[in-house]
Length: 189
Image (tube, rainbow, N blue to C red; front, side, top):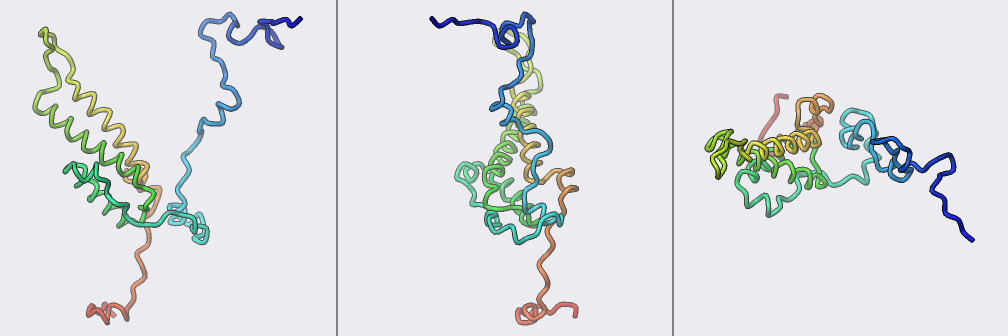
């Protein structure tokens, strides 16, 4: 006959430890998903800092501005921010085709922040409910959420002052005097 016990190998089971609100440690497979420490630096940024040889970048995504998705192109605010931010990132040499998702998140959050700020300017921070009570304008919450997402995405793209201080911009391509001469733009040589 099989006997079931409610006791664990070293005393009562964790769920019945008797302490209210006792923290149950995560299982081994759960703790492997928890990311601790600094976020890993993208390989292209490590090359710019001189931390990694360029030969290992063969598996990196193609550099350049990813194509603008339809969801961003149809929103004039998000579209203009896409053009502005993509141009800045390309000038620094830190954008690739793989940055499509985070650039979409950034531009979408920017457009939502602009819309929420416009609503706040129009209606004010405090609005009246149907019964006449005063409450915080829901646009204030929407603006706060969008600003948080915008700040996170900007940090991921290397577009915050702190992120820029950590990663130098890419070196400009070497000047080719012959190519400039043939194009009719002689340098200062």
